[in-house]
Structures are given as structure tokens and as C-alpha cells.
Image (cartoon, rainbow, N blue to C red; front, side, top):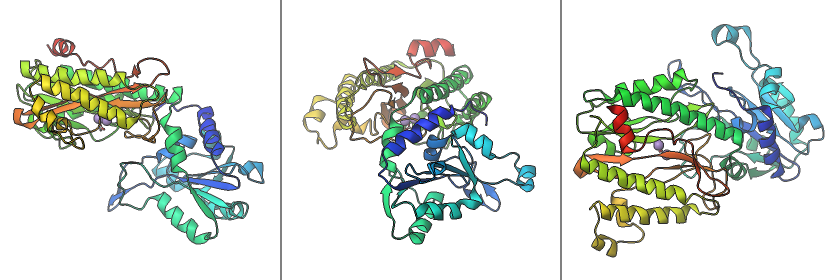
Length: 429
Ligand code: GLY
Ligand code: MN
Ligand code: MN
């Protein structure tokens, strides 16, 4: 692997925390992701299922872990299954995890080959009453494919119809939303790599460069710094494109006088950063662009102060809406009558700022977290207000990644990435 892994004690602890939430006489099963096909013999690069990774650190396809706190044989409280390699795989793909390496990464002492899974699972199933299945209950999930986990659940229900079932996902949503210091180090590293990438763009950007050339500069810094690449599809949106929230074509030439909105960040060790900066193509913002930019920056700074323990995600968004409304009045995009007549379910500010301000960040870019629970220290959130004005030909979003503290304001992990107008202009000139 390219990245520095977390210690096995981290994974021992995540499993301990998970098992503490399980009911007696139950088994939890976690499957890796498939390697997804393209067509012919082409496949997508492998991405580990983040739950299996969170509980084991195993970053290899065709892996399973089992947690069975009440196992009769103490060896079977935690089991990892990995694929037995062979000389063909060794020649074509290189080394795969052996049992000792699997232990060293995960701290799981009992490691079997995947080919033995069904026999061992048969024995364990006779000792338990309940299976914890790991379904995807993320608030934004929209998955149309059948995952390896889905296939396992189907098989297991068919094979063992008399067992009760329970959900792993709510436990994981809760655990994964509060980060260990070691995880914050990985996210910070992803932010630091993103900083290198965005600083490189500051010295590269000028009228006439193409959005995809900016993408190439960015990915160079990611890969050079031991990231697999972008944490999500990069958005490099110049001029009018900056009003398209998920613009990923990145195929337009940047022109003098335009802004370019860059929502790009590195992953590191399967952890995401999520950063947005909006730079002036010619190295200098117009007076109007400055005004809107500073309105967005003010909202970001004020919103960040609200990210403290106890804040409710829904109420936070209502408060940020009020701050945004007042900034939009200041820059002349809304007036008092717009506010007086607004429908509280669809407030006037949404015309210019139509997405959420914050989401959890971690092993997934839109990470786990139960949104009805109050914020807690060690949760990591993005803060990403934007103002989009197609009629003026530009949109501005600014996005940082912050860690909630038990006292005071959150720590901004991406604070070294230039964001003030003066700093950006001086670096570009
Ligand atoms: N880059 C995706 C987001 O900001 O949520
Ligand atoms: Mn983003
Ligand atoms: Mn985001």
C-alpha cells in the first residue's frame, strides 16, 4: 500500500466498540466490495468497503470479517477470511495478504482462507440466534447494483431462514461519526496533500488554460504524495460552469475575467478531504466578485462557529440560512420584500444557495453520522456555503474541513489552503 496505515490497536478498538453494541448470541458479518466490471475484461480500480476497512484495516478484495462476542471457542470471537493466493495471481497481480500480514494489519488473530468460509460459518451459525447484516442506510445512498454484501445477505437468509436478523448500520453510523485522533491525522494528511495541489494551481492558472489541465496539475500532487488520487469526482468549473453544482466535465477553456470554482481534494489511506476554492482566472477578482466572495467567506466563518457540541444539524442549517439571507441582502441579491413574502419551507436564500452547508467527512466524503443526534467533539464536518448567480456568469463556493472540539470553535484542518482574497491575488501575481 502507498499510505501509512493506522495501528492495529485502532482496529481492535473499533471492533470492541461495535461488539459492545451487539445483542447476546449474535454474529456480525462484513463483506468487502466487489471489483466492479466495466466491460470485456476491464474493471474499475478496487475501493474497499469502508465498514470492513473501519473494523479491520484490510484493504483487499474478497475479504470477510466476522464478529461473534459469545463464540464458544474464544478463537472465533473475531475472524478474518482472506483469499488464498496462488502462483497465477502472484505472477499477474503480485503479492496478496497472507494470514500473518492480515493479523499484523487488523489485530485479528484467527485468519482463515476464504474458501473455508461456508464450512466455518455453518458451524458458527449453529451457536447463534441472530445475524447482524450490514445494509446501506446512508441518507444519500442510491445504489442500483447488487453489492457483494447484498449477495451474501440473500444467500444467508436463504440458507438460515430461522435466524433472527439485526442491523449493523446504525451502530456504524454512530461509531464512525466520532473520529479517533489517528483518523483525524489521516484526514489532515488528505487536506495537506490537497493544499499542495491547490497551491500548484495558483501558480499555474492563467487565461487560456483548460479545466482539464488544472485537473492534471491537481492529480499530479495527489499521486506524488501517496494519495490514490481524488477523493471524489473533481469539479473544475470556470465561468458559467461554476453554477453547475456537480459539474465534472472539466472541458472548457478558462477565460480572462472568469472565476474558476475548484471542488477537489485528495484521499489518503481511504480517508477523504473535501475542499473548495474559487480563484480568479486572471489573478485578480473584480469588485463585484470580491463582494460576493466575501459574503460567502463571512457565511463560512460564521457557520463554523456554530459547529460545537450539542448543535443539531437541522437547526444549524436554519441558522446558516439566516446568516446567508443577511449576506444576500447586503450584496443586493435579495431585498426585504423577498424575505417578508418567503415560504419558510423554501426560504428566499435557496435561489442562490441551494445545497446543504455541512456534511460529515471521513472514510466516505459524505460520511456516516446520524443526523438527528447532537454534534459531538471529534466529529469532522465540511463547511461549504456558496452563492450561485447564473445571471452574472459566476458562482462561488468555499469549503473547509473542521473537527468539533469539546470547548470553543472547531479546528480547521484545511486552514493552510489560501482563502483570503489578498493572499490568493498575491500568490497569483
Ligand atoms: N465535493 C462534494 C461535496 O462538497 O459535498
Ligand atoms: Mn466538496
Ligand atoms: Mn462537501
